[in-house]
Length: 355
Image (cartoon, helix red, strand yellow):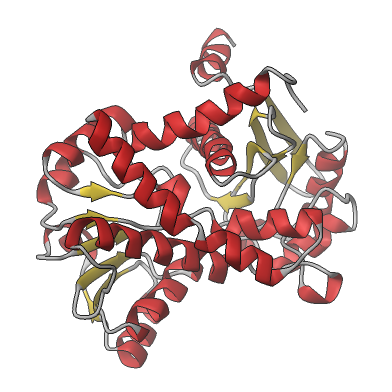
């Protein structure tokens, strides 16, 4: 128990909720990091973690990232996240998702959920049967639908801004770009990059997705870890987090890292500094993958897709501002982005404490 509170206090989390239900098999964790700016909003992912400690570590890291993502995007939201433990193909049922919705309802609006890895708009429909504190609903229900395309658009904006900073213009035609992970977001990003004429390399554990994008977009398939050693212009991590560690960064041969995955740096200070010293421009993940959050926030206040797209487009300018701050203050970009996000939270903290 002492160790658990130590974990919470390390990044100043407000609350962690464990949800257990024997009837449906639900085992879930909801982490609420910071609600100074508003209720904590973050998706629910279903993942077959090796152990409960891994699940706790993941949900704590993800919820913290959501706080900074909302703040740097100018949204009146706090940061939170939820994980459901298990194999989604085996455990996911209507009853399980609805029971999870009951747990969310009992938090009285402090946590708002949405879809994430291995959850869908259909799952959010089930959650919505039990609570109103859910976004990412289908268009027919007045929601914004699948946020993945807009997440990908934001990453595309951040990637182009990175190209502007490094190469002097934001064209990516002819640039060699590797995408690690071609799921919902990575797949949409591939399509944006293909339309602009990028030379594409892809890796994923899903053989079907690799075959599809290789055939349809002419992307070159790369085996697993080999993707880190490619001669590239841009590397885009779009799978799970902590892929940028000491070993993998040493392998990188690119000018830019800009992708959709959350918590890409295994250690923010160590590996943020390492990328900077290696001369690689890193676009902070919580900044450039904020499009999905921007989209569901628009749903939360009254959905308008045009406004959501326009606000997502602003990621381009914010990315350039982060590179400028990093350069001027000689700090790595993750620190520059985190400071910008924390400055807004601290300013609003003078007005109120938590949601």
